[in-house]
Each structure stands twice: as structure tokens, then as C-alpha cells.
Length: 224
Ligand SMILES: [Zn+2]
Image (cartoon, rainbow, N blue to C red; front, side, top):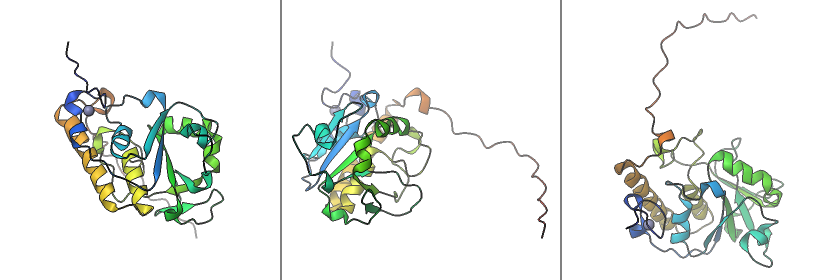
């Protein structure tokens, strides 16, 4: 029986975007830590990154001893790596050391990103204390995620792994065409999932109706 799934990306064939993949040579490496439960997510974007970037690799698991262990290497200069870090307090893109000192993003040799929904990423964060010792890259997305309504993320800054990494690469000085090209493939994925009506049940709910109008509470009196 012919499989309805693509053998390369493991998505249903209707949602496969392997035909759109372009390979981009980056200077920097990308390490994607993926929670095991995120592995076959229909809208998962990590696979597009590893297919497009020869220097990107994905490791599936819950904990690793350190960066070198996660990379499967003997040793690595962790001081030249940064982890994508959600920072809700400070707007704008910035790279800092773990102590908060400013850092030149162009000096980075690699980026670590936690793939998965917010709660799964949080699990990975707590299980890997070495992540806290890495430099940090905090990004403020210029626009809402390409996911649109397909994936319910609670806040504007929660964009897909692909969007975060693409943005981070540009910040580090990689050619902006790479970001544009990666986002184009991801947009195609979202469009194909939408066209094929493959949206998973939990996200496939009607937009929330506005709450019924209630009488506005009386303005509180301010005491001088
Ligand atoms: Zn495919």
C-alpha cells in the first residue's frame, strides 16, 4: 500500500514542502533540541531548517550533560554559542552573556534553540541546566507568526522555531536572503496544511466570540 506520508519529512504528502527546499550555506551552526513529543508535529518547522541548512542539526531527547554532549562531539567552545531565550521584559533584539553583559551577535559561532510548544520547551529548559550558562539571544518578532491561527501560542513573541532561527541568523550577520527563503518555505507549509484541511483538531476551533456586552462598572472614585 502506498504511504500517504512523505518519507523525507514524514508529513502527509498533501503538506509536504520538500519540493521547495533550497540549501543555504551559513557560517553559523544551529542546534535544535527537540522534545520527543514534538517529533512528528504536522506544523513542526525544525525539519525544514535541517533540510535547508547543512550546518543545522536536530537532536531529540529530554536532557544532555552539556553542549558538546548534545552536539555529539568531544568538545566545543560553548562561549561562542548562544541560546534563544524568551525575554518579555526587554523589547528589541539583543545578545548578552549569561550575566547580562552586551555581546556582539556577529561573534557567535552557533545558536541553540528549543523546539516545541511553550510548555515542552520549558521542560527542556529545566532539564538542561547548562543552557543557563550559555550566552543569550533575545528576539522581538517584527510581525506575528506565520502560523496565524493554526497554532495557538499565547503571546506575540512565540513564533515558530524556524522563524526564530531565521531571524537570529540575520541578526548574527548571515545574508537576509536566508531568512526570507526559509520563511517562504514555511509559509508554503502553512498554506498547504490549510488547503488540505489538515489542521489538527485542538486548533481547529472557531474564533472566540466577543463576550456579551455588560454594563460598564462605575468609575472608581479617586481620593486625593
Ligand atoms: Zn516531504
